[in-house]
Image (tube, rainbow, N blue to C red; front, side, top):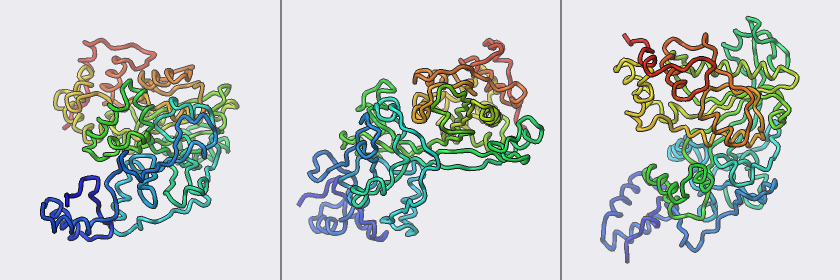
Length: 456
């Protein structure tokens, strides 16, 4: 009898740790008895499937279906529970970077792996109308356009055999932001009773959470590479975590373990897809140190607050609507560890604007991994065709939106009086590299003279 291959190696969820240790020991043995014991011990879950497996039968998923019918397009199914082992049509797991916690909850016996959620009364609180970009196979490749409809009740003929879950949730909320509340009390934002609800500055919003769902052929095309190159590098760079990127080339959809995005809408959501309406938009990439804790080393929080302020004011006009899209891309998607190491290097070397990007490149090998080419997908999903006010100075965001066929009337830079003292290094360097400004662009010599504060 031959030893089991990696594809045959399986781990019984119900086995205890000693049994798993025994399995590991046996796996490295060539003894016939040990191999028999291993085959008996491990019997439940395949590590992965391959094209050669006779029992695979993935649920149909037509990303370029050209149809508004979500049933004919098909749901994204990644879960191996129930019959998902043979019928899944996506690689990865739901909930992005939180998916591992689901596994931990199961391992800690706090969650039944076969738990079936009830989605009763979780319907979207407002409609996002279908548009042809949803199913042309190229305009939206980083989110599932039908992710808000992916619940078992919408696919009764499939739900009995596979686990169907949403990757988009649509709700409403009231914001209580101290900065906005202060502006209301100062009279800089009026109380209208509809958006700004009261003199305390409570703000009514509609909001949408979106997890990342990648259509691999579309992602590859967006970056000018082959699908094979994309699959191989994703497989290798995640430490071989997703073997089906290699063994299942027929599966074109991948749920990456990364953060998603949240859309905050001020005013009537139906205005977003109407090009005759005036949209004020802030596209913001997360920066916990500034957004939450108000660090003075960057302009992230001030620009976010300014964007929200302008979105509210625009929504209070008869023809206006405002929106902020918040992407989980900490430290330009390099991560918070890398960001803090860069801070250390900047301060150690004197922190001048001419070396701003160099400090990141020395540590990360690249200055930015946010890949704004994917950012407009959420705008396409919402049917946005025109932006009246773009609350961003980023040339990368601007270029990505224009390349997506969306027009921008005006670009609004952050007001000078909102720039924290220690963030002049950042803003001067970014303007020099191509960020939009209505002011002057500093020369290389002038950048050397822009210093950040020293740490004591």
